[in-house]
Amino acid sequence: MPISAAADKLSAWSNPGVITNAWEFGKGHDNSTKLPDMKFWLMDKIKPENATDEAVVMAYVARKIVDHGGYFCTTQLRSRNKGTSKCPKIWTSYQNPDGDVDRTCFWLCEPGYSGEGCKSGKAASADSCNYTKLSKDSLTKDANIEYNQTGDWDRNEVETLMRQNDNQGFFVFGHGNKKKGNESDVILVAKSFLENGHGIVASPATFTAHGGQWDDTFYSEWLDCKAGKSNLSLTDVTGGYKTKTLCMPGFDGDGCASTHCQNCDDPLTKFNSTTGSCSDCIENHIRGDDGKCTPCGAGETAVDQKICLKCKDTEYILDGACAPRLAVSETQLRLCYPNENASDYTACMMNTCETGHTVGCITDGKVIGKKTCSGGKWGPCRLEAKK
Image (cartoon, rainbow, N blue to C red; front, side, top):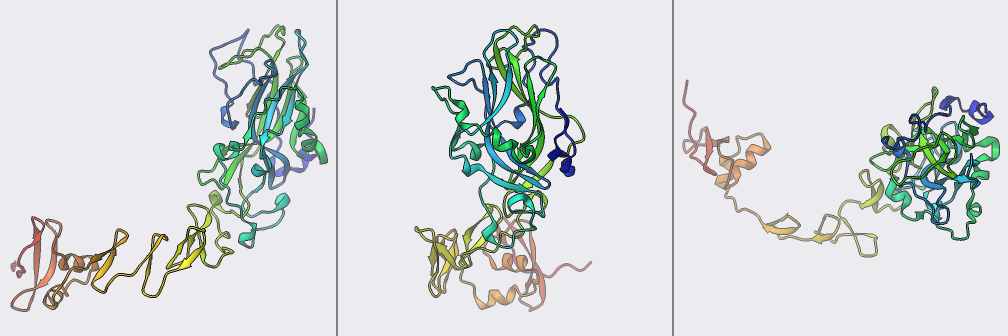
């Protein structure tokens, strides 16, 4: 089957082609080869309880493909089987998993694009930002393989949605490979997830439903076509395709680091680039049990955005509490003034020090000398010996 009209329009994605021999490991059935397709999966492949002759896996799949991204949802990929024992008719199927599917659906776009269809430029405000972190765990949290005992799997079918409007969910659909009854599609799938959770690395992949025999660890194809079962694979594609980094709504730039999600709706909050959200309170505010940021009182200081402390003039904040300041005489202050370096000045003022460290000081003769730390204590202030 030729590349679809939609794929011809998607020049940015080039022209990926189906791998027709993705499942051939040699003559007969070879149980020594590990499945090559785990990098595209959100979970291990299973046998549905009501259809042991078929296989299901979940992946993060583009339901729609556009020039600069796609609309991705957690989706079940299933091999379907007509059930005959000799050369059964096997085909691909796409279904919603159980659970909150909409929670996992987002327009993911290349840097510089955002919004529905990835047509507009960078998001202008935090209203366009979404702080869900994409990962295998987050995408499968509320989406589970459905064990439908009635066998009515087609009620969750989403293939019609993916095929409408110029086959927008497929690069290539319904390609029959040289093994009778097998069917292959080329779809756009998340190959990996960015460490910060703000996007994915998207890649075309070959999804093939195979006739053959199920095995819990390996799958082996009966080349004489006598097994009345089906399995699936999700592998790389051929051709000059492009892999792209696609970002969550509101994230942009290299590695989908945010450049415009820092304008928080709540003026008492500020953006935290580590959490990817407006999770921090502004300076000298703390977050209460109700989740709202409130200011500290007069003379108080916010500590770790959790408590407000007001210390005495003779105290300072240390490890989240008020601690007494070290009493220093005016004489000591004067002795240490030669040290222009702030760390040396601080070291001179402290009762303890790092052995071997030397700082400037004022001798009894009121001239600048040096003192050296020994055994954790400062030695006397002496003039340096003339060379």
